[in-house]
Amino acid sequence: MNDLYMRSGIFLAPFHNHDENPTLSIERDLELLEHLDRLNYHEAWIGEHHSGGFELIACPEMFIAAAAQRTRHIRLGTGVVSLPYHNPFMLADRMVQLDHMTRGRAMFGVGPGALVHDALKIGIDPGAQRKMMNEALEVIIPLLRGEMVNRKTDWFNLTDAQLQLRPYTHPTMELAVAAARSPSGSLLAGKYGIGLLSIGGTAPAQMERHTANWGLYEETARANGHTPNRKDWRVVGFFHIAETREQARQNVQFGVQAFADYFRDIATFPIIPPDVRDPTEWLIETGTGCIGTPDDAIAYIDRLIKGSGGFGVLCELAQNWADWDATKKHYELMARFVHPHFQKSRDLLRGSYNYATSHHEDFLGQASAAIQAEIDRHATRCAAEVKRPAAE
Image (cartoon, rainbow, N blue to C red; front, side, top):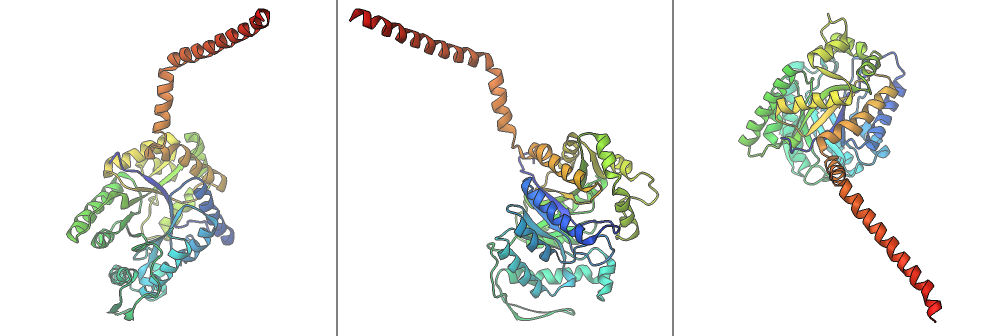
């Protein structure tokens, strides 16, 4: 997998402490995507949440439409739309519109919904969410292909349903399914041969689970006539880097405890155990996150690649552990020093530099000889011009 080009991205839930101005928090998320676009990040995935007071975006499609007007290159995906919360026909229609509005930069990521409270607010049994996700995707994919669908379930009824507009991207926009602990996401993604978003952390034990889910994905894809490709596998990890390890540790004191509290008190599964006194050291020591320097990030990603066999996109969880200036600096350091290591964008430059240094003395001798020859020729011409009038 060393030859696999690793693209860069973020997974923007987003996480914002509830002691901040929410309007400014959303604006800052839009500014972040502008920043990443300038830094050559390949993609960003934006989540959907409706409760908990920490993850603010309720409609990723609306956010993506605004972000697309502010950016030029970065691809923008729903990360994810919770399928049980939406009529599948209406959702497919919105995503096709978004595909046109972004000129093909939209990606369609789906999942069952992460927060139990979101489901309960609209009368959905959390135990039924994965079944509902499967039922929705079963009709969304043929709809995106332009097919007419008739399907009735206990929560939607499609009758001669056909979209009036084909996707801008042919044959359809890129799709992906989120997978964390359950194998349901891998099975569903493999069934349709679409991408896999592995979320939930990248500690060694978690990467073992992600790798097992990818193996399940490959097996299921082949059984359904699809050829699995690791470029379609996205892994979401936790990172914050600075010029020094000490600076990185200091930076994350801004928000790492609020992050830990949210996952302990609100989210389905705590990332940092409640009895941990120092979240920063725990994240580092357990390998759950990388808090350090660009070199630390390179070593951390190397571990992920070797343990998994390789994947197509490294998505950083946008967690706001650090304040805004340190967060922007983190992404700049990742783009300048970490991503090029895995994208081999500096290899030819280094090769050219090394070749020049190894032949430096030869090149100097040749250059000096060429310069001296030109000096001699010029001197000869001058001498000839001086002698000519005397001869005449």
